[in-house]
Every structure is written in C-alpha cells, then in structure tokens.
Length: 115
Length: 109
Image (cartoon, rainbow over all chains, first blue to last red; front, top):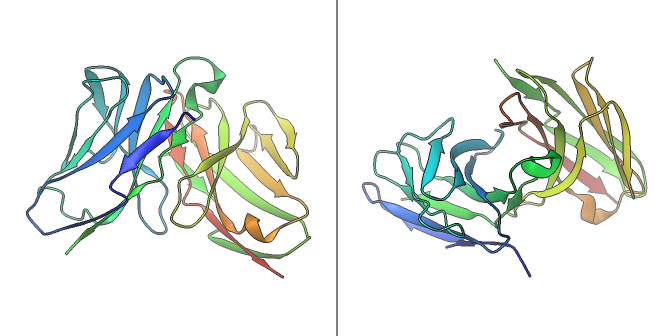
C-alpha cells in the first residue's frame, strides 16, 4: 500500500546534538512538507518542497535544514541552533495542481524529546 | 494577520450529534479542509469545501459560508472511536495551509 513512512517514531537528544528525521513516500507525490505540532497550537510549517532539488522555508525554518535529492525522500535535520526542539514532527505529501493539490497525506509522526 | 479559530475542547454523548465550528480570516481563500487526528497519530483527511453549502459524507458533513468566514463539521451517530482532535485548515491565496489549533472531542458513553 502507498503511504508515508517516518522514522524514528521516538527520539531522544541531548542538547547541542543534531538529529535527522527520515521521511519516505511511495505515493508518487511531487510536494512534501514538514510540520511541527505543539500542544494548543496549530500545525506550523517548517519547510516544503514542490520538486526535487528545490525547497522553501516555511514559517519556522530557523534551526532546521532539509534536502530533497530524491522524489521519495525529504529528511529533516533538527540542528543545535533550534532553541526549543521538543515537539511532534509530522511529514506530509500531496499532489500539485488542481483542487486536490492541498489534500495532504501524513506520516505517523516522530516525537523528539531533548534531555 | 491570518487566523483560524475553533473551540479547544467539546464533550458529547455516544449516539448523539455534535457540531464543531471553525471561523477564519485569511488572505485569500482556496478551500477549507477538515482533518481528524487521534492522540499521538497522524491527521487524516475528512473533507474539503470550496463552495458554499453542505458536503455530506456518511456520518460526517461539512458546511461552508465564505461570506461569513465560517465552517462547521457535523458528526452524527457519535461512536467512541470518534474521540479525537478535529483540525480545521484554510488554503490561502498562495495555496498555503493555515491551521487551527484543533478541537479535542471527548465522547462519553
């Protein structure tokens, strides 16, 4: 079945360490997204990519980095520059163009805790 | 600024009907989405409205009034498995999604 796979599901990090969250999709979607979810807040966009080798900053990109070397893959690195990285991270993908373009399919999420 | 408002929490009884409201103020409008998210899990798509009126899909219906910047999600014949958070999101003029904080729905027997 097609879908999005995120790993790891749970991750613990010491302050000052970089960590990379994996996101892989086999839906043949062009667009991929990373969101952060905190209690009591709406989803906030970190980065998005609409095509291979291209990506744009979202609303809260500081302290994060991404790459899009393959259509299927969109890893997110949480760097030591991110001051408050403890959160639930969601990867999503969608088609592009048309009314269905914004219908997102989400991965199961990765919960990052900084110790 | 852009803003999506929805109630933080609602409680309803199994078998009953509940309406979750969402009001929005955005720069442009290219559709409104409802997603369901069970605790600790990924959001899943429920409905999409771009024209005024009611869209029905089984036990779930979604309504939109663009002139009022208002939508609601109506859940009928509530089941315990409907206990979840319901997220409202609006696609703005740049087709970027603006998300509400979500409404946590608690179903009691």
